[in-house]
Amino acid sequence: MRLLHTSDWHLGQHFMGQSRQAEHQALIDWLLQQVQAHQVDAVLIAGDVFDTGAPASYARELYNQLIARLHQAGVGLLILGGNHDSVSVLDESRDLLRHLGTQVIASTGAPQQHAVTLPLRAGQPGCIVCALPFIRPRDVQQSQAGQSAQDKQLALQAAIQGTYQQVYEAALTLQQQLQATLGHKLPIIATGHLTTVGASSNESVREIYVGSLEAFPTNAFPPADYIALGHIHQPQKVGGLDHIRYSGSPIALGFDEARQTKQVLLVELNENGLQAVESLPVPVFQALIALRCTLADLPDALKKIAADADPKRASWLDITIEEDDYLADLPARVQALAEGLPVQVLRIKRQRGSSSPQLQSAAMESLDELTPQDVFARRLALETLEPPLQQALTERYLGVVESLNHPEDHPENAV
Image 1 (tube, rainbow, N blue to C red):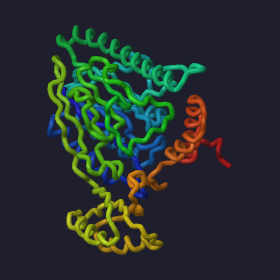
Image 2 (cartoon, one colour; image 1 turned 120 degrees about the horizontal axis):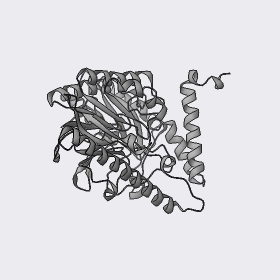
Image 3 (cartoon, helix red, strand yellow; image 1 turned 30 degrees about the vertical axis):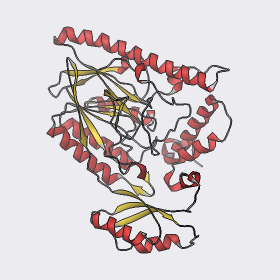
Image 4 (cartoon, rainbow, N blue to C red; image 1 turned 120 degrees about the vertical axis):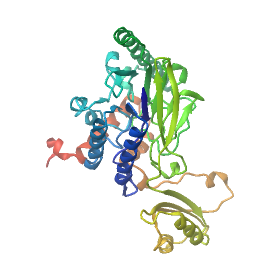
């Protein structure tokens, strides 16, 4: 069984006023080439296939194109919901997509519903998957009055661990049934869209749902042959273990990810379990460069970037000018220096020189790098509200945003 593990595509991401459509189209083309070159049997996307719960029409078109092209190639596809995905959006075409060889699991249900098989190209089952998406607290536990924040975290961890164990037991039952039919044992893999203990995260990983588990211990996973994880954008092994992996996002979703080598993982399994995991580096379809220098050094820095840039696709720049003097015309000066070069300046910031390490390391943000969900989450964090109320307010807010993005689906809001 050859499985391609990927996650966190974030189709439809609107990045500082720029669309990622061309990059995602190039990614799909590249992925299909890898599927054929490596004779992949199935593809697994471990959550956050979309960037928002109300994806743009072109993002849905890319999603459908990926499904159709994998079906034409005779390759199975398993899609797990992430914290950025809308359960209703993923579920709306679930039954139809099943006829195209795509399985979609958007939310948590009965254990038997999460023990599924992925096929070999020849059609027979190749592996069993404990297919768990992003687990929302309300799906696995009930809030108890008087619980501290730590108690709630421990209760949620125990509930998620119990969910994994129940699904794994259902997978073992399915394994025995199929072994009687096939004559050999199928490997078992598990999925997850969460943060694990020891995982290295970055700024581009955003939590939408208040009350999510901070970190899930690796020893709480079931003893699956391979565990395919999503949510963390930086590719990595978890706890140094070969069989527990984050594939990471296939394209850089922020300037903080620009230096990462993006990848998908080629996983090979047989009846004896995991045989090999190979990293397939993803080409850079759009250059993102974070530049920090003084205004005097900027012309030379821009010329160096321009010399290495693709003349057909301008590099996107995030420029921080280290300057003590306040310059009212700083954006105009920077844009003038970039004029005629194969670069596009998306953001300009100024950081004053200071002997204070705290000021030097202070994070700088602007509204153009935040989503409406981010802004709401920041505002909500200033209130002292119980987690159930925070959760309810967040869900209500997301519903309002969706109704504004798709008014045709919410006639009750019409004026």
